[in-house]
Length: 178
Image (cartoon, rainbow, N blue to C red; front, side, top):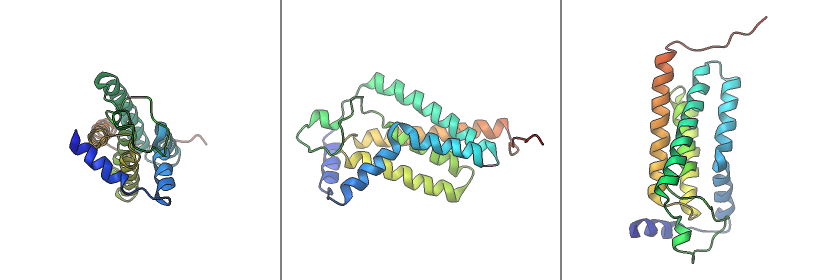
């Protein structure tokens, strides 16, 4: 665990009055998965091939269930609970640390998008990565929480992509009544 604190303390050394509000904003984008849920809804509404939105929705739901089960089974303390001497710039989370739900949600949707559109998927992966790293900067997750959350998101996206493309090998469109 000491190596994880060493990484977190290194992130703490990066704190700066300009960077702090940026990191708080970035992490807020991932809070409660709201950004990723809204993005999924927008994809369902505006993207013609409905498989994209379906994959995002299923991956997001699957990762949320798995993260909830793991958090309440593993019950890992947050870094700030162990070292309360670190100056926090965000509210201290009350739920458990392992795995990172921010990371899992972000990567579940980002990789789902990437499976259908490399350009938009790459942009989403960059955002998911920034959100995941912000969790370390803000001292609310251990590096392994973020790594496992990221892996959960990726695996759920790939599994749901496989399932959706197997079930609907052709593009899936919703026909509009005229």
